[in-house]
Length: 47
Image 1 (cartoon, helix red, strand yellow):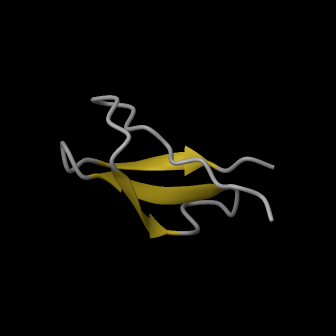
Image 2 (cartoon, helix red, strand yellow):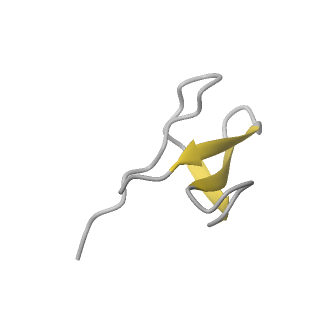
Image 3 (cartoon, one colour):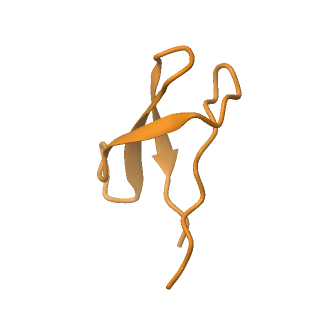
């Protein structure tokens, strides 16, 4: 089973993020939120 990496926040660099939605604007992106600065961001999924 593949391991999933936790994306870092692009604003503050914190690794404490949560996945809000498995799919963002496109199916290759997921929507996350940083628990430190509370900013939402999109993450491009690994293949």
